[in-house]
Length: 214
Picture 1: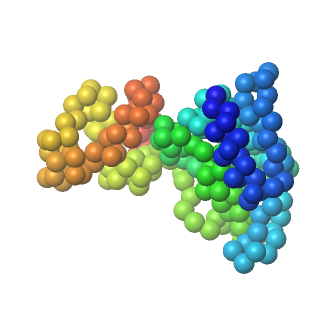
Picture 2: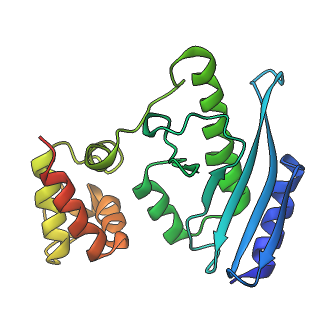
């Protein structure tokens, strides 16, 4: 656990979100952030406050924090991207997994994921819809990630490329198997690197889920 790095990063976060506090739990071997997150609109007008708990596991910053909405302002429903226990899906899992490989700093996580998530929840509570793009659920969300984030255009191509990554058949100086006619190193190299970072177990699970999509 990089204690000094967490403390440094949380001090930065605390300047923006002063009603949040952190404590190290020796019992659970994680940092626990608790407190209130005030949400304002783009003009600085106060909207509402959420009471949160954020669990930061051992291994920081190479982890995915778990966000729990304690105040119960959000309906406990999958269409609101929150579980019955209040665990929030602040982004598609693969995006967070890829970020965790590079290191998720708590100040950036709060600013770029947590705050926008709850601001968007309030927007939906008032308007009935989210302000921006919404990820699909389960297997459809996995396929959406491959198509939109990794720029793999079709379901069948995603299946083929995942199998090639698992088999170690991607060579950066050969033509990209996506069919673009360009070499891997100037085409999908970043996408393949991200897929490798997920690990074989995750990729095999992705294969199963994408196969289930029509």
